[in-house]
Image 1 (cartoon, helix red, strand yellow):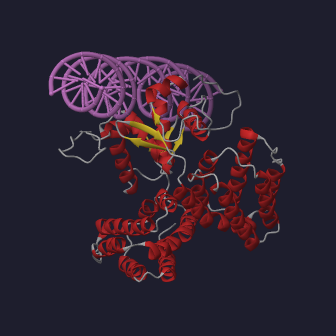
Image 2: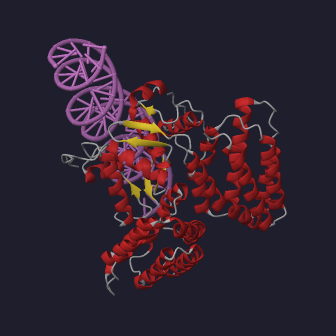
Image 3: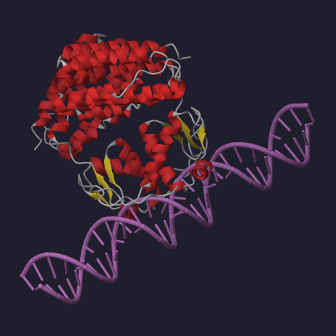
Length: 228
Length: 228
DNA sequence: CTTTCATAGATCCTATAGGAAATCTCCCAG
DNA sequence: CTGGGAGATTTCCTATAGGATCTATGAAAG
């Protein structure tokens, strides 16, 4: 895996070279998200190191981080496995947790987001065009990325780092993305996002919490249909 | 670091030998908890490997997991640092998150814990004797361990793995333990735990949630006095 | 005496090698 | 023909070595 030298005048604290461990970590997350490593499949360290053209060392460190993230599991002396796609019970648990965190975050965001924050929220919504009716994988992928940015922005602007970290550690968009590539209801999602945005811009905590709760429940119902 | 062979008739799936990475991970967590590595201090990988009598490889993997846990931070090419003791803002954020998760968990626990679960809760409370008035470090340590088991058991018996994992990933008892060694109000903590237990045993979700919320607020007030 | 620069030593990151453990394949016996 | 056992191969884990990068120290110059 080639390393790249940083250009002159780089920002303070950036390393001069890319750290392989970090690159491998991001690569593996993307591979898990895209099901390039089948859910539940064994991760053969020697083989994957060859595929990625790295040695075992950065790969093992990346896998250690993914283990703590809950995205792979380790069976000592046997190997790592990619986490399964969520079972229905795990899916319901995840949405229950989201119901605990995100309406609260939306209410706090409505209270606390200043002008700059609201501008960021508006910019995010503006940047996301309605998905093509039969857009396929790329369209679904872009919708998921928008969804992740939008929800992440709300938890960030809620101003509670513990809640933000807790939300990020669920990796919920990675998990939800793997359930189905065929969410044809992106239009509905955007409509619900706009309702949340309206409440946030109005600075109405109760409305924001209610809109977020409604969105989560609707989203859960949409995705639930795709579970085994 | 010596390895120990498993005895005959070991449970299925246990490796025959201890995995150094896992041992080092637990050792480092304990060292962080006990402030054997000063909060904010650099972790010198070569030196620590010598101290623990292991090579860099299992140490680096353990550090990678701790990084994902949020207990150390990595500055690429410069080294790892142990996370700081919580600032007041981080402390308040953590308790806000606990207020979102734990009353809900207590209510669910009251609804869902069967006979075996309630027995485990009672056993945990019975196993914890009142701390000696001036018990010092060991006494405080035992109280923290009980507190962690008690709260962990409630989130486990609430029956939502995502909420349980979210709570565990806060490592809140490690963080809170590092704030102060001198919680002389262990008696008060136990009294509040008994109130929670009473509600759980009565199968009263509202009472359990209320008792947990009161306990969290009281606990937060007690610890808050020790923050800078 | 202070500051700057250069060099040396320390530290970080990753590749590689080797031993332990698991897995797979083949052969033999029933 | 099937099942079990043995051996070979693969995989996992960790130690070690070497190159890249950072840091600290000492010397020289102002």
